[in-house]
Image (cartoon, rainbow over all chains, first blue to last red; front, side):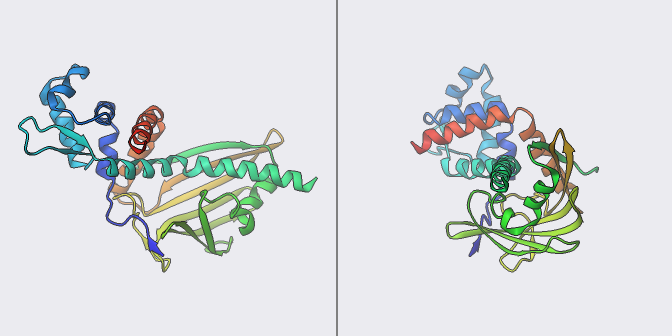
Length: 114
Length: 163
């Protein structure tokens, strides 16, 4: 079978997601696209600061920027987001999920022994 | 750069001998190592420098793990080198993330603990570059501290999008 995941480099995505402000921006964009001005408002942040965060998110492929409209609204790139989430969950659950199953197996084995 | 280490401990309500068997008998390993998907154990030889070749199937794609046993000290200590592999079991860099360590040294100890077993698992990049060490350390930090909530936020976003 085909080995999984070649070509999907997630390091930039990972770094982009590690910042709480950027996660909040993504949560806002999940509701629909927004301009820099609209994004700056709830975060009590200057527009240049928001622009900086958007650049990081765009470089990671997590958002796209509209090129035609002058305000260049940002929108979420759901596919990229899903790939990152899958990877992170795999990592987080790597051992905890396994050890949960090992715990259940041990209980089964003890019952079989009785 | 000192190698960052990921450590986790877990108490099991079973004696070390039984927990040890679950790590060293292929039929038992197949019942928990998973991870929750179709898997095939192509080889399993728990002696020093023996190999454990593990295939995880995800639909049309597979992830391959090549594990080499380094130290096998029943029923208290197991040391393994865990690497990503291609379909020919050749060690390759992580297909999922750039700079993820190619090989992780995994040390598992089984200590008697209040009638059960305290399992301690340590994960350290093996013969890794500085970039690999950094990627691993960053992942440890992000996931270990404050990532719980962040992950929930992201998981909610994805659930909303999927709805």
